[in-house]
Length: 72
Image 1 (cartoon, helix red, strand yellow):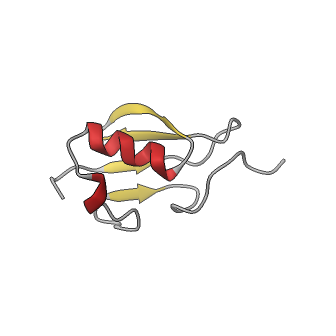
Image 2 (image 1 turned 60 degrees about the vertical axis):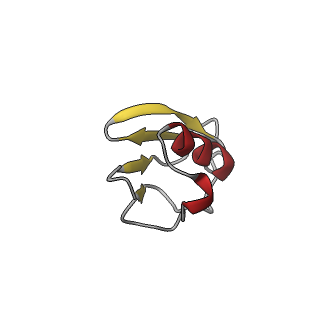
């Protein structure tokens, strides 16, 4: 899908997950909608993105269903 490599870091204390695309930090996503917006800005069609596609997205610290601050 466009040859991009997306890395989504584990949730931080604020509950957000840092998003990198091809090594560049794009921001912090707080939901799948935020992540899809970052991908749209990177040139991908969010309607065509499968968040479980491991060829596109490397999830660290949990997959696309893990959002929010980690438990204490």
